[in-house]
Length: 509
Image (cartoon, rainbow, N blue to C red; front, top):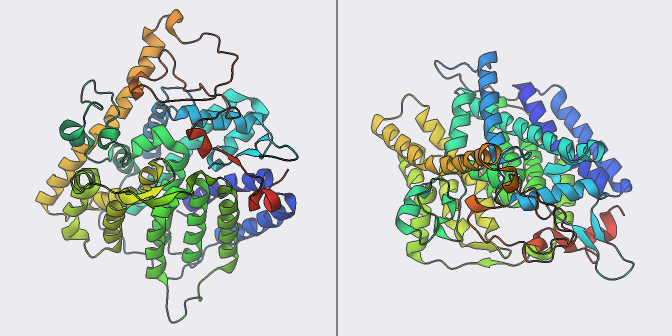
């Protein structure tokens, strides 16, 4: 399992190193990279053990055979293919923005400046760009198609790593954990049936069930992959690594976990907020309060501090998310949302998990997150919930894969998981339907291949249901570049950075 950890850490660290050389002046980037590489070398070369490994589970021996690995690769590959990553299957509306980010990372010098006059606003791409950087580098060398192919492979690798870590954490086959990850969801089907007004509907079975509660949404993992893969995949991997470091019983586990959390912050800052309480739980469990600094690796902590601080300076250059507060919710609406989006399953696990701090924190987060407003949209609810939903899935997996689970609890848990699986099935079915339609049903005149307008796109509104988006085409690529965008959503990506500390003291020019 050392090899799995090494690959996972390198997978998460490489994009930040690219970020340093592209977005940070060399006088800062070079020593920062040297510190991070030294910390990684110390971390990965020969991790010693500080405590006994967990007792093996009777009847379980994790061995990744060739058939198991091959089937798991095919399963995760099909899932990533249907997500639209790479442009080989139908892309949902959010891909308009994600494709635009990749376009600009390929076509502009790093960092991406749209305007940089001697005086006045300096318009710059300020977003969670880390996930795209390896693919964008490939695109700079070999073009757009190569970048998309590499993005598909990069995402596939990330998802495969997550399933392997889940297999070790849940002490079962990674095939089973892949299926759990793909089909785990809240009871959106019941929310749609009883509480949705005009949209979504149960028929046709390709609607976007997640939005039955209006602005509140706890996205299934399939929805996360199909809409916001750039935040979801690294957040999943960081979540399981923070837990899984205990299984590897490394002496540097606390520093390792802090490093992983800082990388999550770089890739997906909102998701890292939801992950932070779980990091604190693991640190609390491992700390010897009589000598709290005994096993700390200060080189690794320094690397984590560099990642966190430079990411903070960069993200804070965009003021779009600086509006914060609490949003009032009617008690009835909140209870409906909480219970159907994980609350019933959380309560069901109480007899087995009530002593587990993860169970307590998960419930508290799922209760509190809907009331928090960060920025102008509902991104905080959808992204800060990634970690608690992931740990809820983990606890559900621990329950259903444990042979000692009471039969009634097992049946009830499986029933909730089967009902919840309809949400990802609707997402997958939409992708299959639109992809099949494009390749086999549309005539050439209907394929949406008309010459694009020479006028740059400045606004993009989601005016139709997701299943009716960009008819006749697979790829959601209407924006092409963010340079000319001037609508509300574009402010999440473009910022005037002239007065920011990042631009004045850190950014390369």
